[in-house]
Length: 466
Image (tube, rainbow, N blue to C red):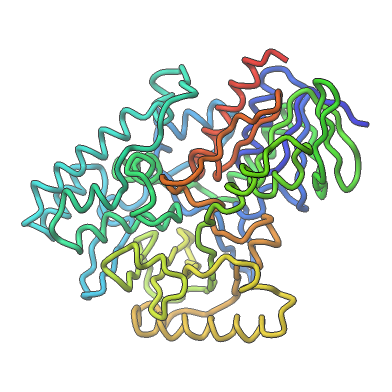
């Protein structure tokens, strides 16, 4: 039996952040990761001498004195960011053929969208005022200004993103442009609250940033910080059960057993319920959590791009003006999200939403390879039609499906649980003393959201005074 003050299950962003915060409080800390490396999704992969990003493309708040940089400094991470193209970090390609570029900061966005949609200028100002109000009054996104953390601060607002868009605008096209960033959290505009969307995507209108070295550099910075903090990292170590022994938690794994005072799980909540202490949760609660909808799965083509440099980081090819319909994974007319790496020789990820169900993408199924090949061919044909100036320069290298995601992160929904404002919320606090949950399926998704949930459980653990 290995003994620790605090033990964290899951070596993604949230688990690594929780481990560093625990060690910072002077606790003897262990981090368990089922895979061979920490945060494999964020690290990306290399094929044919080309590196592809799979978990990080860009973020807001990474400028000097902003919330993301505050988090990195708090965790002791040496991460260098850079600003993306101000007048067009994203391009939205509408079904009508119009191409709209997203700009920052707010005055640039207001000006550029005002020129494209002159009849919506006043409505755009009202909408951005609402977005700004949510963003600047979020208890979680202003910790760099006020170091107090209100654990009961609301994230959701009474209205959905779609309701606010419908109230503010007449043009369906400007609604589509402003809702396209829903692809970044995987919840359609009619289900994500306006406040949650503002916390996840609203900050991009203040500033969009990349990270030198991409997701791999972020993971490397975490690894160095974990080593420096004295956190014991156990790779290829899968937690199989959590038991209670008085005030102690006993974590059984495929290798060793661990005892700890505080246990923090950063794995998918549905996977957590499989290993949670027996009788800790009522069957009704388990049923509600297991019924929660997953975000769409990702079917991704990876390619080398040999053409003239593309300055936009991302291109959204929307098949429908109603972005809610773009989340239909059974559509014969899918939308696409294309990410261009900032490298000198650009590499491209072409992502489409697909069903996250294991039954649909099962590597052991006899028709899996045929389904994968047919899906790949359809995407290539679509890109040839929708973006011929890009398609002619692509050299396809690799393909991934939700089965690939399941292999590396243990679930096949692209971002984990959907943050549906009308459904049960998975909260950091559990009914068991000293047992907490964090991660992007808990409360707030995304890179910064994962760190925020880690901060929350850290404050809870500190208050428990164990």
